[in-house]
Length: 396
Image 1 (cartoon, rainbow, N blue to C red):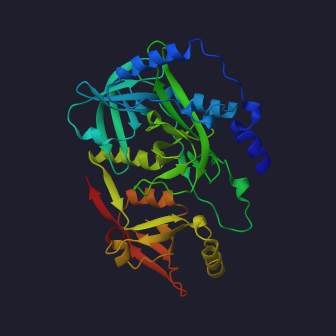
Image 2 (cartoon, helix red, strand yellow):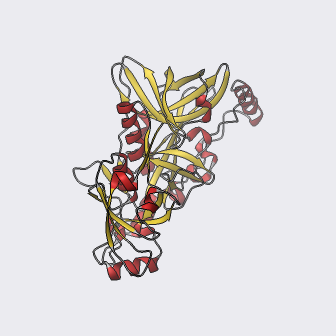
Image 3 (cartoon, rainbow, N blue to C red):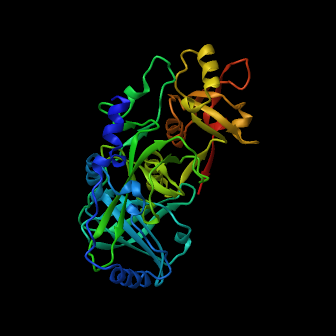
């Protein structure tokens, strides 16, 4: 797909062709204001919840965004949390498991979950509401699992595991690799600039009926977010607080992450990591989260002068992760890992991107890591025992 065709097809919301003037409201501004004031009083101390179309970029979404959103919308829910009679949190989520006995929803975690008397109400896409319970949560990843006891299955989300690898080979055309879903694979290759869509659900005033789906299109980015969690990625979608915890989807309607609010953008936890977090909880009954003791990013995100040096000395090293920071006193420092090292193998697996190293480390056993050391002019290759010197485990 050429850049011109990409702009024409996927940035339709910014094009006048998709703009349609809104119909005049059936109610006067005064009457509408009275209705909303009454509604907000019933929501206790929570701030006013507004839909995504608060932002102009979400008003005139194109048909491609609508199709992808409608494919994913049946699994998107609206969640209300209460402590006693007081509402403590309202957000979105999505269904990842549903059987004849229970349903599991992933959403964002809140510090209010630490209280023992939290009550959960789940509003699903067809307007029904169910009592739920907090099954598990993790304030590092800012993720939570909500469980509903239900004797009929609900629609589940289609998950698309991210592959964020891009070659630095000068002979490759990055645009040609964009938007590729690998054959016979559930992984979705994503590069900066690709279309993504944040979804959320909003419970309207009872007078208007229904739980509305919301969509906020944007572009995947390698920008840093303000959250401490290093596993988070960023997109340019603009969402409101009631969209926190909702799914981020690709143009096929596959869920690629969980949305978090981040000022003028949307941070999201990749579904790869969220899925492993849930699988570990089911297996161990606890969160199993390894710590590398170093901060890494994709090789393609390194400064161009660094990439030139790597290609000159190691022409076959075209994908991997590059070390941006090593924590003092960490096992990574003890292993000799240095700034600008390029890791190409981890846990016996060839590593091509950040997500792969984070996924492999979650299943870490006694294995090796192969590294190109790039901190100095003299490069060398080292082998390091995985479980002894690279990874410290936290069981919490």
